[in-house]
Length: 128
View 1 (tube, helix red, strand yellow):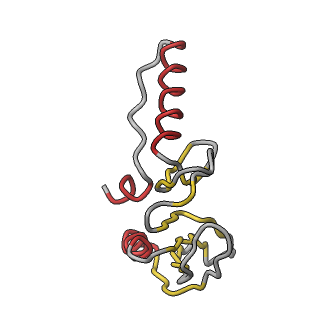
View 2 (tube, rainbow, N blue to C red; view 1 turned 180 degrees about the vertical axis):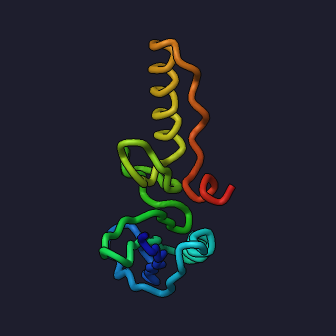
View 3 (cartoon, rainbow, N blue to C red; view 1 turned 90 degrees about the vertical axis):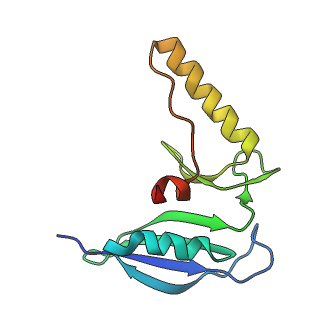
């Protein structure tokens, strides 16, 4: 059975859009994953790396930048990280997340499906 670790990596640089030197600043066992997310959210720029301690595999499970990261779709505005199916964790501004949601609603309507729930930032979703 795998053992999970949540490692918080943070940057103290003033600009968080291009060149950040991330350093591991905290480590939480698997059952304290919410504490890891809260810790990262309290730092100006941080992410949480989920690590399987049995085989060493890693994946970013949460991202945070104070004021939101530069939108990975339009590159013009800032927004929080969203967990998007097929895209993973991406920073999206209000304008782009509304566009993604409208596209999902249009697809649902065209296929006779129920309208999807509105998208919420990854941290809000994880801690609710």
